[in-house]
Length: 445
Ligand SMILES: Cc1cc2nc3c(=O)[nH]c(=O)nc-3n(C[C@H](O)[C@H](O)[C@H](O)COP(=O)(O)OP(=O)(O)OC[C@H]3O[C@@H](n4cnc5c(N)ncnc54)[C@H](O)[C@@H]3O)c2cc1C
Image 1 (cartoon, protein in one colour):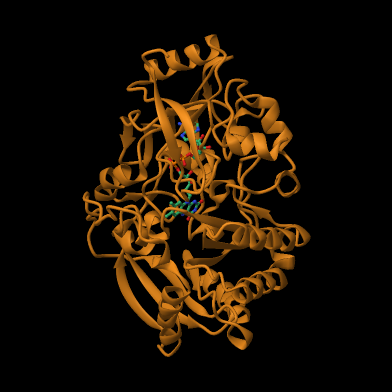
Image 2 (tube, protein in one colour):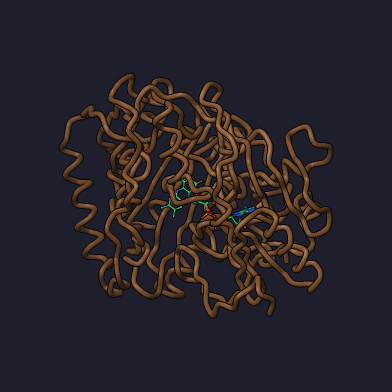
């Protein structure tokens, strides 16, 4: 073992179902990261870049190989407060970045549901947010990046770079090289607050009507669904829309994260009873009238960040996250079928999010978002009972011509991946030969 790599017995990703041994290196500078990649090549190792580990399954794990953690590549290189173009190292987190740029009246072009994501991770999964129907995915706002590879050295890559390296890296799951730094176009904001509209959602049919109507007037839309409801109330929930407010000040979120869970919650913490109690709040919200309020971006975009390590709520066996996107043409029927199957299974998801995605194409070859409807669900890991349910959901997604999100996955079979991502072989052709992941080996085998 060299000095750069230290042996770590176990590394778990966010859902905590998959755990594996890795050798881990944590470069402090781009120069050190490049030297580590040389060592990987010389010693014929298998390695994978990793950010803050917020992918749920095995797309950021490389069992019995190495991980190169980028979180110390966290320096800002340049920021023009007139144009909103930021250049930063790829290990900068969205959490830190927002504290720097919000006071200047700039925001991320799109943000996932957590700020604890690095710029490199946001590119490698081409993340999307509540404004996908307007802004598309993260990769659409990346102007260029520096990519370090074990076989080709350090490359400056932008959309005009000959070959597919830009497109293969956006949503490329960290396989085309280690991103050292990024140029990102930010968007102007006048306030750190959003004007939010919250309304009850009667059922899944109402979702499709409301989502279409609100998308015309609101930049950000999302629905939270009660997965235990059946019959006429199948898909009932709460629909939230929001636009940036014109006033309220430019105070960024608090630097301190919320209280954490010091230990795993006992396995029974999130059982049927607690799930039912949680979903009672949805039922009560059905009685509420639509209401408007002004909320800070942290509460609007990143509500789960208020509880540090909330993933421990599911106990030591962890949980699966399952996120699909179904094309618009088949979305209504397939969404109803999936929600019905989940409600009947009694394994209702604690957190279920339903959202329409727009038609702005991503520059990425293997980007998850496409025009349609995405459903994201958590399932406490109950062993074969849970994996059997997920396999039944796979069948619905496959028949409907949809796909699953690698960032949320630790089990999708190769056939569903290859159907959903027909360009995967172009990414494979550009993969850095020394980089690999558990996910990639599984879905390309
Ligand atoms: C609470 C929560 C909410 C979420 N909400 C959303 C959402 O709304 N929308 C959405 O799209 N996603 C969402 N996600 C998923 C999350 O945004 C992605 O998994 C994201 O990629 C995680 O970034 P990370 O820095 O933790 O990367 P990791 O999970 O550590 O790695 C992710 C991928 O990036 C690669 N990678 C990391 N750094 C580099 C680098 N420097 N160079 C090359 N490759 C690199 C890794 O190899 C891996 O393939 C959510 C996750 C959580 C936990």
